[in-house]
Length: 117
Image (cartoon, rainbow, N blue to C red; front, side, top):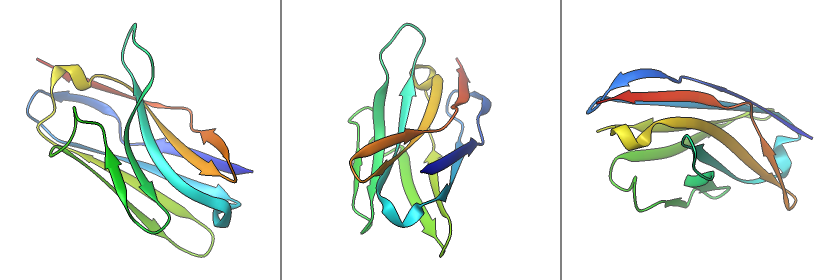
């Protein structure tokens, strides 16, 4: 089992920046990758960034060059960050941290990001 707790959401003006954090605990040594997904109002959830155990990353085209995913690992925890800059109104949504452990996904409770135009 992996537990995830997100933080860092809020209200920001277009063009601004925000950093989200996700703290993973539990069987963190089983985590193969972590990602940030977002769900805009009335839209399906989409993955915006992923970081693998060895550090390689993937980004959705809509956020390339504006978002950066990173992680910091200790013996018992893994914290993933999503640095978001040049935010756009379309980035508004609930952002969920996802951990992939032994083929199974685990999600946090989500954190709201609202970008005002």
